[in-house]
Length: 442
Image (cartoon, rainbow, N blue to C red; front, side, top):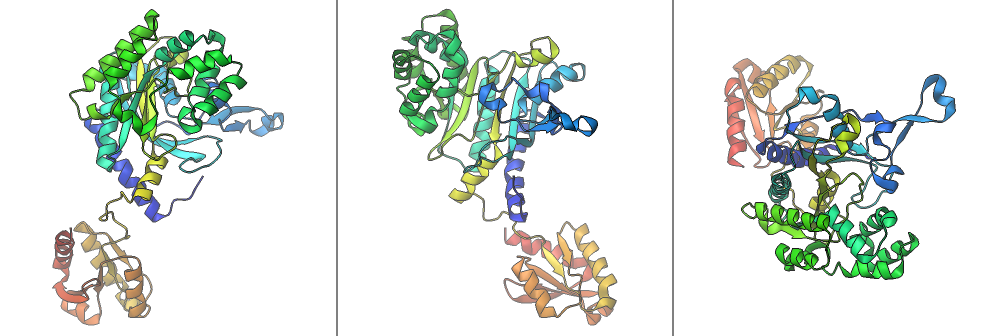
């Protein structure tokens, strides 16, 4: 869990702003939920490993001595969404399109781009089973990443039912499907040998493990770019014989076909090794892969049964989540933030000559703010050189000088620190003049 200094916050606001604008272009509406949920709401929704990472909150007051927990910090934004849909279904549209950008907490081991408190940027559509939903979510996420400046990403696609069919074809018994999926989810992190070791440790026979890994001949990550979606679906069709698996393959084919007319078309790759560790997924699953990044920038999938746990009525749902922290880490390392990103607290600083001019300085600052400028007032009547240095170090481009002569004349002298020039304006016109100068600099 970290502190965010001004430059960090500006970068975060920049990325969040782009994500928000893209999601709104697709007709998604904002939602916020509390940081804390009932522990029973979260437990059992994230698989065996996810449950270990929930931050539990001990009972309070007279119950504190029991050492028991009844609340928890939210682990993700999907389960709270399911609870909201069940609780407020009468107030929400039948097909609810929502985006949500808020922090979540996981008792995880910190690593590069991995933190215990981090923001997720979710977009979900509830109320439809159509593959149009997955196609549109992939397109929205593709637009976000493109507008942020990513050019080397792919969106990996799979279906949990395809995985189930492949597990069965490899000879993995149903009782070991869950542990096998947990191991497969680590394929891009620990490689085939590491996964083979995990499968053995989880009680899966070596011949079944070898058969299963043989199905995943397509390398994960950016190497997927050399394989077409249709070719990979055809290849998988040669291994899958059961009706559920073949239906899932056709669903993936429909998603790819629907997205073929969008800007996301060149980004989609069918990857049978994609597992996604969360246990609530029921159909298509998706994940963003970027070159030279262990792990992903985000992912999601279809979870048609989750809302029914809370409401008793199944409502189809599908969503995608981008990890803000990972986006920021990669963008900073690659120098992807625009040079024009605001890095100073103000456009102009009003200097303070002495205490008697304070009222006039505040009045001038008020006039400039009314013009749309960001204005700070230096509060102490220190040496002018010290005030100028402060503005220069903080990156404030203009300093307004308001001495006795200017006050008497109703003017203000504006110094351009970069150009080392200065001009005198009527106080009422100074704001417009600074705005014009800022506009010319782009």
